[in-house]
Length: 396
Ligand code: GMT
Picture 1 (cartoon, helix red, strand yellow):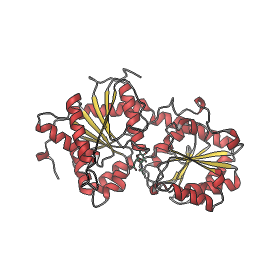
Picture 2: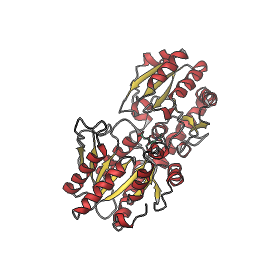
Picture 3: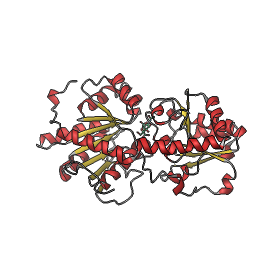
Picture 4: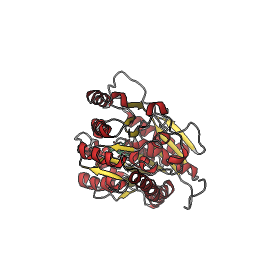
């Protein structure tokens, strides 16, 4: 896709994200890779190589943030080390934009870096993309609320991955001076294509069973016990296996639940796997039971792979899953309704095929990479055209 960019000049962008397994890091990395393929220079600035970033790509750099060690620091100040690295990379590579994914602490570090640059007569524009718990959970904690609002308001542009998250930002933070633009997450339709992969799990492990799948970082917000409960109920009527991909604090609870319900032999915990498209290509149903979900990137990747999604009607998930057409959404915790819908779908092959086809085409129509990356390019252009903000003129 090199050279697709229609703007005036290619842009030099610094991207900061959490490099570990999770949706915001995945989106930031896929965006960076797509931007570089379109001719922009992309510099990742974070403490570790992002998990979806290959070792070498043209026009892509990785700058590691070294926090160092000092016995006095029980909590090493990563946000300061990040600000210093951002400052260096902008200065040394003449970056135009720092694009922060997840507000805390990235947007704050970018603000510090920009202020330091201005001391030296330099400057950079700061774009912040809000992803989810930076607004819905962590950002609203007393320790972080004021700095989150400050950092959002001091960003030159702000985007949110769903309408739900934009509205939640206004509701929780006010942010009177902000214009939060919604730019949905996206998929590469050539990657998440059911027909172009071979399911890697051996057939003797699966047999004639239906494959039910869940991918997440197993944090409490994902309610992974509900995933196991829905699966166990479905399996009472439809021979199935549950494939759990990812890892995190609630994995042990999910394993316990599987033992408790007598289905542990049918639940495969595969851990953190980067290449999920081949696995999704063999799935029949994807479960996402979270009590908060600003978007649900894994659900979108499942839909694009022709896998209907059953989950909770939470946050921005209804913007991704069209109830009755590409999946089914129920109240958070309504395990019985989710299981009943799963059984009805998996026992009706015509209905399943219709929904699978609808899921793949709806994901391509609404969330294709090229169209969404163009929205980010437009946001960069608008941001670069804005006059420089000064700390003394902004409201607190
Ligand atoms: O906000 C988070 O919890 C972190 C983030 C992650 O890295 O896992 O997840 C959020 O961002 C994703 C990418 O935009 C969204 O698809 C997820 O829905 C969102 N998670 C939540 O809102 C819980």
